Image (cartoon, rainbow, N blue to C red):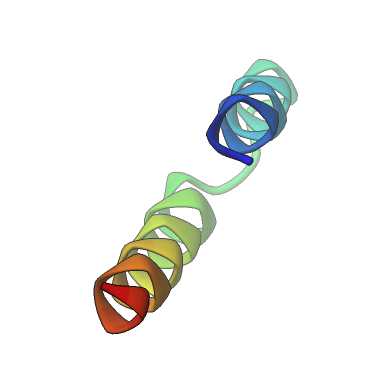
Length: 37
């Protein structure tokens, strides 16, 4: 799952989308991972 997420983030970065959006996604994903642990 992680490699897919990294590929997605790199694609978003290449498209120069809002960094705030990427950070928000990272916070949500990290929150989900912590909850699963």
